[in-house]
Length: 425
Picture 1 (tube, rainbow, N blue to C red):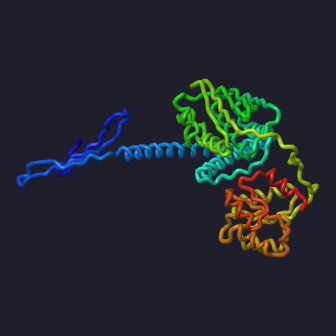
Picture 2 (picture 1 turned 45 degrees about the vertical axis):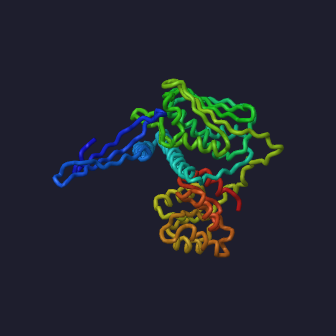
Picture 3 (picture 1 turned 90 degrees about the horizontal axis):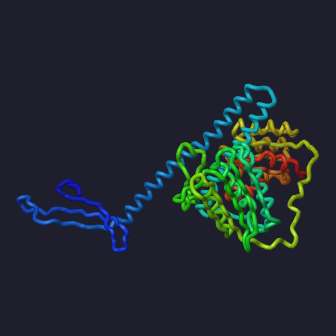
């Protein structure tokens, strides 16, 4: 109890009820005085403020976790940027082949890491707003898991882990193959980051009754029992200390849980405690193999090195120059423009076969440029490719409405672009 102005008393306290649960109450007392100023009686209130106090504590906890998340995000962004910076300096100061190749590999690996980081952040936003759309099909999970193993190979090799895999015969699920691969990559990446260098990671997939069980097991740092129930909560991590600061943003497992549940499955974590490693088990409903399936591995027809006319439109000068040089090295004829009006003028003069089009252009955005190009009769058969930092479902939908044929997200997969440009029109 404490005195306030005019002798008013204010007190917050907890009382345990018959059920053994404590609740917060607030009591306020105001003195009633006579003409001489003597207190003759008190007027007071007693209010149940338990819900308010719990809400305040929840807000404080959310603020704490938000601050931790922002600190981790800064760390996760600075680490790959520092590695890229060092690799660039090595490349600038050395003309020999080995340092150049090493620098190139570092940059490629760190760009993949940054791309996955951005994708995870966007996926969390989509999931929390219910914007994730699954493109389900009948999928054999084994090739999908093999792709996941390839995706995490650079991180595994960097940490000198022993990664093994064991699969039963073909196992089929009704699923979005991209999202199943993402689930496996996130679990394998989590295992690699929380396993000391030289550790062991194992991926298995097996049929168990009417389910497919995907299991990722490691001999890493383990999970304390009290933290197991929170492993799939947003921004939760096993250890926030500086020693474990490379554990990531704490969003990968949340994405795993949500994607698994969107597929009608479950995911569970188990650990023997600190130092005893972890095991994550994903269970998905199994389906019967399809009677016949289309050949999805048929490669696109290639142009046998045909030189293509390409108009590259990007307001970032460095991006445009870098992409232009790459396309020139591939044997293509390239012209560049840096805004919408100049792009339209260059297109009418140059008559390109492909237009690589940034969306976030100043003044006239890429969607409007695409619509105006499609309005010209000569441009009906030109291949329009959006190359943009905007990659959500709504962005892709708007691209399609504007007449854009393909939508690639920055930083783009250059192999995918090369394959796209190699197709015969």
